[in-house]
View 1 (cartoon, protein in one colour):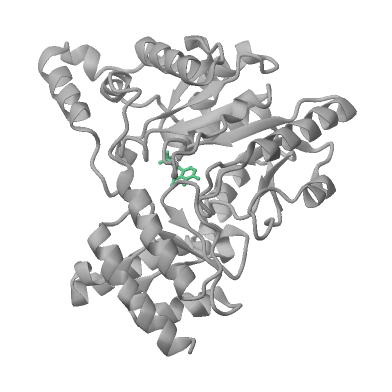
View 2: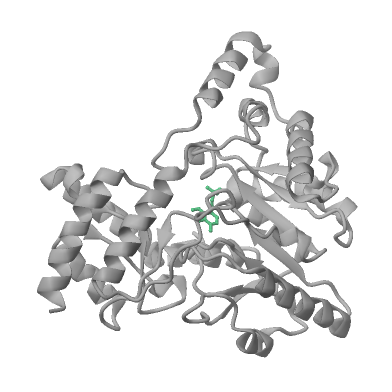
Length: 395
Ligand code: PLP
């Protein structure tokens, strides 16, 4: 008999994907250049030229059997050392290669982290609005995702609500700063307060509560801000990173779990990730990609276009009367819809070829998300469509 779990999931297809598919269909009718597709978080700038050169060089000069061979279970030692050194240099935490587990993107990093620190029946708390894929990521571990309602309008943490849901069953708190979908960074104050509560609760319950810090947007920060590095605030932190956005390599599937050396049982967690891999059929990222990324570890793509797009969109939306938290980073913005029903709002926007994603599946109804990883020229044209949309539908 086929699995009921996965069969039932076919009914709950990702809303983001549905809007993205619509955009493609509409594109085949009117030309994709005329569809203002803000649905998907696929980077719009290329990987650095240096990355391409490094790949060419590896292909030409490395032993092909080694280059295309299996990666060691716990990853390539050069990659692990380079990542650990970079984190140590940037954030002042004494990571060593033994604290780094290379994973196939943030998705796989999270899959390993959850399994290392929770068991079926445990709870993992996250703060709305969330990346909707957190639901399947957590559900398939047997743990339960518990959502704390959004703190509006600042999109920090509603600590009163958080204290209502934290319990003996809490294995971890999952945070994503800066956030998909809001673009908001948790402040130092927020992270300190979160750490204080967790330290207190760990003592009260007599077990660890981990922070799983999902950080694929760590390098995409606006207004010259400094990002507070989560692991500096709390020892029991597993940082899940991805090069999908910073180096524009989402198809290459590369990221890592970094285990804070001061974390409880730190020496076990990376080897345990290797054991998790055996069960879920994961293999470390391709050897060639680990070696290539190791050579460009402190580089990013030219991320400036995202800030330029954000400023254009933010200014226009404010001018049009939207309530919108100003993103600190990422390539998302999360305005309040002009009616309570964000699905109805986004469906009306389709008439103007604006592809906006309603926020219901982000756990924060009444908003919509725009992924502005698109050409700036298209952003500019879309703002004219926005003016028409608002004037006609919400006079
Ligand atoms: N976490 C968040 C918040 C994301 O937005 C994404 C992808 O968009 C992921 C995790 C998964 O990223 P990756 O491509 O690294 O698996």
